[in-house]
Image 1 (cartoon, rainbow, N blue to C red):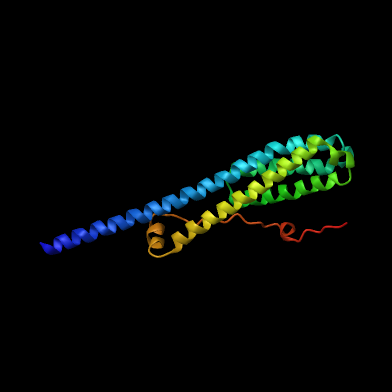
Image 2 (cartoon, rainbow, N blue to C red):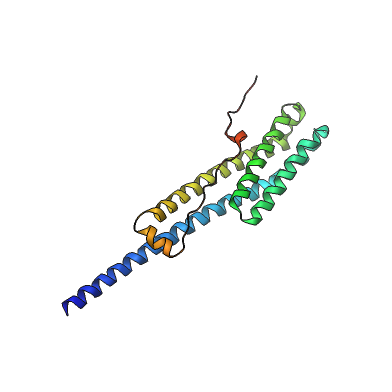
Length: 187
């Protein structure tokens, strides 16, 4: 009779351990999903600001149409990539959009009236704030991915997690060489 109680106690302990591991994996998965949602929210904010910025710049930089079209094309590509749910595609599109936005701000250096325009300055400030929030959201996402992947790769959770078909998340990375290059400042 004592052996039955010991086995029953062991089964109960193992069940609690399994429940704890499962709940930890679900909690980590939900945190990663929440962090990804934060990236989406900031991307949406950026997408909403870009048309206003482009229309403000259009009035001053009429012969810079190619740059403005690149920004709009990059914005549309990023929005389309967001809808696909493909992380790699969205990363590439977001990195391209960031590069084209830099070109619009570089345009302002050639147009002193644009640089002094209150609408442009406010949009530039808003977009800069959004970019900072986007970076923070990406860092938050990556830290949650790191925590989840570490939990999923650690013993004994790795055995249990793989049985339940949990998979690693991918980090949000900068894959564009121009994004990694040092910024050149010339006076």
